[in-house]
Length: 104
Image (tube, rainbow, N blue to C red; front, side):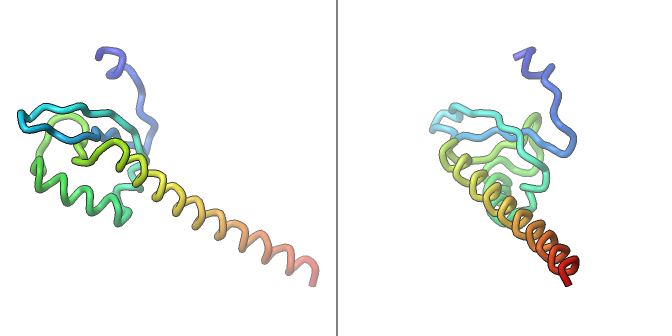
């Protein structure tokens, strides 16, 4: 556990703890780091709403997200794919535009 605390978190990233509690209030949780910008995505917003219902707004330690690890990885993949596609198309569009202007 001491090693986890020594790990530096990249600027602009946040640690989340993902997992589902069992009937006894225990459960297996995994830690992930994600860019803070992901928290503004509608997929994450609905998960944050669910987290506030389950855990409340005030927690100690990492932000807990009530979903299975598999569901979280799928959600993260969807957000990454969407973000990459948006930035990729946006960048490509400008590159193409400059090429057309030079040719004219």
